Length: 445
Image (cartoon, rainbow, N blue to C red; front, top):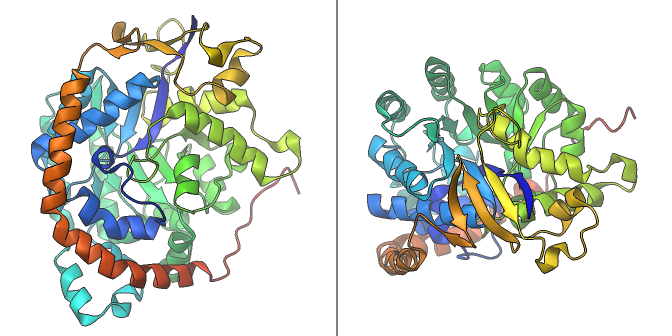
């Protein structure tokens, strides 16, 4: 066996697991438009089921902890968060749950988009309005105060989902709530070119600079994606001791571009690795995330001395991600004083024949196929390639029943998506064609 620290997923979404494989040519903006269709109408049991599916997939693929941003409409609820949290606890996985919250719909957040819709479409999307921000803050505060699950295993954080989807007062309230309870703050920042352009349009500065003005940045703060961060953004994040959850698979899947991990590291930004949700990356395989992080760096520049190393990638997927979860120094290493979160890889598997270099092969060769056992906190959660805590066959039956029910319930929102998609696609692709220059520090040049 080869033992390595449990991989840690720095960014995923529990609600996405029942929606894997539901779309192909989706940009981020089309994915957001599809949200009410692919993620709507969930019962508490289905929220629990969706989270459990993701947890089972992750532990089978060597991932022992994650930063999960679940979504509930029109606002997060303590009951919904508990349903998600119980799923992780029942599987035996660690998680930090940060409910995604906003007080503007996607259509309100993009300047000019609502005007591009027909009057009938405007009427339909008005029905998707979110709860007032004070309601979301109050519900999150209730959950934080009354959390009954063991926080060492499943804790909470706060996630104003995308800066321009939130009013400034809402973001300030989220910042204060996170400080009040000593928890993390997580937001999708500069994920797509459209987001970067909207930030400049709405605020006259980047989204990172705007968040800095609102007091959001700090060691507790994690940027999800950061594809369109510029040098000033990275300097701000590095100076504040903040993190980026780098999701190379999702970034390519949604056509957002290639995040620059080397530049982030150069600016002293802590980098963790994530898969994003199964509704837009379609699997939760952290081995694939490592492989893609390495390959993306190599595809960005010809000077190989500037490529991230496999050691840097492996550290990002363990210690770097642990810091994003607020669990640095507790998980992410095989060392005295750390939790016993250990993955056992079968060196008799074809992935490891021959064994030439453990680190290179962990990042470039392993795909989850050699995972034999997974220990979390000293407990065998996977033994001989089987989950010990969950009846996976029963889970599959529940998922199929849920799939059929949700297809019926969400048929009207699917039809709405099909009407909206051409308009949103044209409008946002037009925005994305606007020239946008980002400057990055490149080795002193």
